[in-house]
Amino acid sequence: MSNYEKLGEFGFGFFKSFLKETGEGIRNFFVKYRVGFLPEGMDYSEYQKIKNKTVFKQLKFLIGNHPTLSIILTGLYVSSLDKELKKKIVEENKQRIYNKYKSKGVSIMNMGATGFIEDYVKWLTKYNVEKNPSQQELIDFYEKILEDWQERSIFIQGFMQTLIIISKILGKVNVGKDVFFLFACGNAIKTTEEAISEISINNELKESGYKFLTEKLNNDDNERVWIFEKKED
Amino acid sequence: MAELNLIQLDNEKRLEILNKLGYNIDEGGYIIDILTKKEVICKYGGEKVHINTVAILPGSLAIINANPVTMAEYFMDMDNQDEQL
Image (cartoon, each protein chain N blue to C red):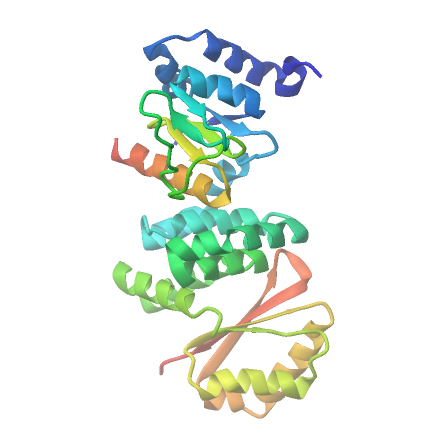
């Protein structure tokens, strides 16, 4: 295959005109045309689209230019990939992210892999409207959730029985976690609904001051999250 | 931020570009400055930049190891620069 066929008219044109440049023109070329060169097989054009999505803009509005925004961008990119690729990218980059962003960064990547970032931003927006915190208070809250996201998350497996799920939920309630998240997919959704229904009938959540809401994940009826929040009266 | 045009090129062609910019590779495939012979360090990852992963990007002419994390950091950097203008 010729260079022209491989790069397409656009890419080939840029590449050829770049090679004709000399001296200062070479560096100006990059600025003038806002062109960059990546290894074959790498395509990050999706990042430009994600940055223009409402979810990203909304989070930026809420927390400003927070240092984790780049990992949010990566997380949203990861959440758009298929399952195998998600897993691969998270595994390949987990250490790199931990080294620079510590547990907050790893939590965002895990949220990305679960497809939860959009719902997290939606929920944070709701929290902001209801509680009306200062931006710094909201940032502190955002960071607090990320720092121990693992501690705040329950992943329900298909083999888990209702009683196990109830004990997992009540475990978080009993330690007084102000917010926690429960994830289930496929058959585990029905068992989780039964478990929540049972503790709701017994008023165990209400008496402990908890309310919950549930959302689909990845726009898929087979993936759900429940967000449990302890309400201050 | 105005859209960037990101073109995928094989190692050979990216090396041609790097040569024109004053860089080459050492025997391990890492990018070096032709004049100083020093290895180029990725400003985001802090690691030596390898020919298999090198991206050459506009802005302050970033020569970085491209991966999902560094590319996101680059895009955010560019946004911040644009906001400051």
